[in-house]
Length: 355
Image (cartoon, rainbow, N blue to C red; front, side):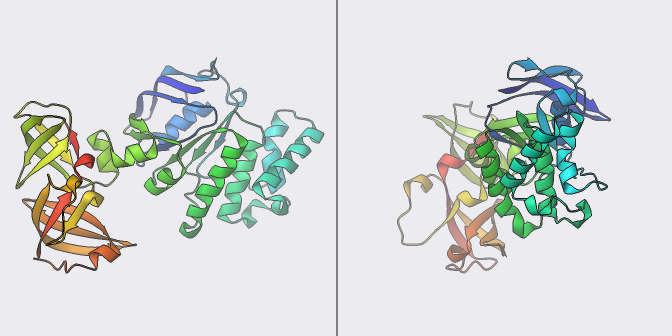
């Protein structure tokens, strides 16, 4: 188990603020957050490259907080890979063993095993400047894994990879590291990458861990407003509680009312209502309405729509602007030209209310 308790670290004008996390020995944990949120600073604290001003880091019950980086049993792959340009691939990979004084026979055996796992045996004699982005990534992974770390830190490991290759590498690298049974902490700002790779996910914003949980939990029900906004959810509205009870609250927003699942809140209290764009559905005239949509039917006016990959983003107005995300085939069945009035329903169970 890797544990961080109340970790604080100040670098320049930025500070990590009381970060507490625990990760299981074979977990693939993804730390998600915007640029400048402190993700790399946190990894450097774990690796021993930055000193926390408060808090503790333990691995398997052993206190690492003040320990030399080479003695921590933690591998680190920085975003730039930091490969040595004057060394061949094989010497880059062997570097960590050389400075630890590992015998040549053991080093060569580990090199052969690691190269086979990562399928890089054919590039061992090459110079670093002759490698592609994907090959450099594998060499950096090999250099970190050959020392047999108990935990591995990956800082934006796919940022230098061509977009067309990234999705393939996400699953390939995760499958490989899972098979090795090593704890991985993978830092990224890419929402899709985080969702595809994480066993469990933590969201770091402005130096604070805002939410930790399974990917489906965090993406379907972002707990604080800051996480919802980071996910790109624009449908966040201020309202006032008009009724409360039986596990739901009714919130009066500007131009519409929303019935949402929530613990009891006092009538008159000001709250924020958050609606994911994919949770709005077009209601076709003359067709039955599903039970989950009936409490929240709105008549809206279409403002605009545009295609993004396989989904249309549709902006509608009902006192407030509301963003919808619809599959292309669904959207193309309807004439959603600007000015048209349509009825939409909102999945009640997915509406979030923030005090």
